[in-house]
Length: 229
Image (cartoon, rainbow, N blue to C red; front, side, top):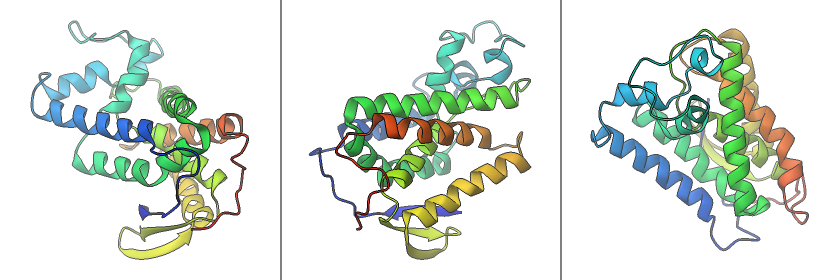
C-alpha cells in the first residue's frame, strides 16, 4: 500500500487546476450532504445512484422507487458517492496530489473528459466481471486510477512523498511507487475479483488512462518527462 502526501511538481501551463479543485469540492460536498440526510436515506441513495452490475447489464432491475436517474447514468453518478470518511479521504488525497499536474498537461476541458471516461470505463469493467452482483459500485477509484497512470506516464521521475504500507514515510520516483501501486491493483483484481473492493474498476480506469493519456496530453507536454521535483 502507498498513500501519497506531496509531490512538489510545479504547474507549467495553467495558473490553477480549476477542474481538479472542483472535482474534489464536489465529491466532498456530496458526501457531506448525503451524510447530513439532505437527500434522504444514505443506503437508498447508494442503491439509486451507484452502478449495480446486474442492473447495468440487464440481468435485473431496480426496485420500484429507486430509479432516480436512468440506469446508464449511474455509471457517472456513482463516481461521486463514497462509503465513508476513509474511502473519501483516500481517494481525494490521490486526486489532490496527482490530478493537478495531469490537468496541467492535458488542459482543463480534456482533463474533465479524461477523468469521467476513466471512471465510466472502470465501472463498466467491474460490471462485466461481476455481472450478477446486485451491490452498488460507488466511489471515484476508477477515475482516480486513470489519473494515477497518467501521472506515472507523464512524470515518471518526479519524486513523490508518501507513506509506504501507510506507515513508513519515503520520497520515491513516481515510476516506482505508482508502478507498484498499479501492479498491486492488477494482482488484487485477479486474486479477489468479486471482493468488497472493486479492483476491476481500478483496472478499467488504469487501462483507459493508459490509452487516453498519449491522445489527450498537450503537444508541449512530453510523455515520460525527465523533469524532476
